[in-house]
Length: 116
View (cartoon, rainbow, N blue to C red):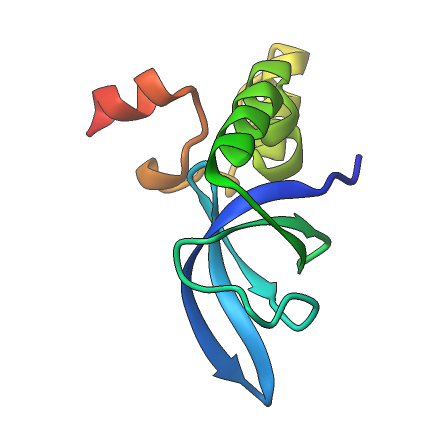
């Protein structure tokens, strides 16, 4: 599934004459192109689709959308641990060589906070 997901701009840089940003999607950080919304600033929220920021979004709308996506399991589907999900769904262990570092293991916020 392809979604436009809200994310918060953490940092902005010029890369190969292209305005790029590190964007946080509820704990997952990805590189995003800002060329379609050149006035984006650090701390702003944007709707992002396939690596491109398409529109600015207010913080409350972004939080509500991320919470809804998380409750529906959409964030894990978009950004999650696909090997782990497949193994869990099959009732099997993760395939060898697909282990994630501890700080990248997906789970709900309470599980992540418990590990911190």
